[in-house]
Amino acid sequence: MLPKLLFGVIALLSPVAAQTIVLEHAHVLSDDGSEFLSGYSVVVAGGKIESVAREPKLPDDAKRIDLSGTWLIPGLMDLHSHLLLHPYDEAAWNDQVLQESHELRTIRATVAARKTLAAGFTTLRDLGTEGAGYADVALRDAIASGLIPGPRIFAATRAIVATACYGPQGLAPHVSVPKGAQEATGVDGVRKVVREQIAGGADWIKVYADYPRREGDTATPTFSLPELVAICDEAKSAGLPVSAHATTSEGIRRAVLAGVRTIEHGYQASSEVLQLMHDKGVALCPTLTAAESYARYAGWKLGQPEPARIRQSRAMFRRALDANVTIACGSDVGVFAHGDNARELELMVEYGMTTEQALRAATSVAAAVLDKQNELGRIHAGYTADLVAVRENPLESISALRNPAFVMKAGRVYQPVR
Image (cartoon, rainbow, N blue to C red; front, side, top):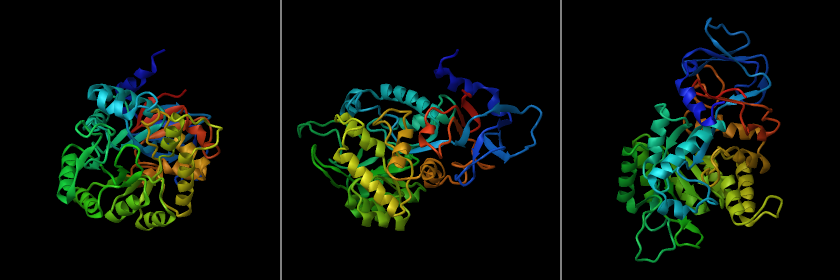
């Protein structure tokens, strides 16, 4: 039996990807994501879904794949990931930024990408390399060219932070060390770094709208509203959207008014600022798993009374649901183990979403946030053939999304039926 590591290579070299493929005998998620349909086959050709039909017309050489006993869904998406990080209980963030070479971090990221794809996540938005330069662009391009297996990546490169408002922190004032993101100050300064990141290959621009200014402090807004407006305006000029790390209500308010497309984390968001997000059409990536992971690293265990960090994220998520904010799956994976992205969807359901809403958050809703709603996130003719089969109905139990039985990305089989 070939090791799992080779499956991605086999997929890249296999002639199956060039054939017409028909996926048969699965329960197929409906176009609106509300139910599973039986008796339909999904025909894939040229990396696209050609048809979803009961009795499709097929060429004689079509490759048939029997998915009996499975539920077929679109490829999953995680819109807040960090492939260049690994779990903080393995190595602290400061140590990764200061002590691990870019080369080692990039090599490790290729393994993380493979694990992510095997977990059924066929698309990632990678929101910052955390001190590893433009390595996410290299990963994106290596995957897109077929050099290595992994999910489709939308890269944010270095991310933008206000001068002296990011880590590593806690060092003596005279010590100068590399930062985990690109620093900037003033309207002209932020425009300059946006231009540099676009030139470096960014698909998205990420800005930190707030952050603790000193080690041990609580977060406060860092960029002014005019600076945030300049960031969004410069990105818009190049046709790129902006994502904002923001945990405080004021940081979120400024970012939303400036024109960002998504808010990351949002843990302290008030009902009023969540309503503003709803009114402006700004989506939330709640990163619930990151909050849970930080609590675990501090010693909390499942079954114990929830610490304040988790209570805060749970309450915010409930307020966001009440405000009808668009919520997309964004987990902050890298803080925790790559390949465990489905934990975010489990927590979404535990905190108040329906399974149907959670599945959409990682498929059709995520696709709309990426402005790829006509290409990704649905099992529909003409869409990219990102398809995942699981052994239980995820509309009955969202945990069914763990351990996919089959993974296809852009018409190529990366995880054969198991």
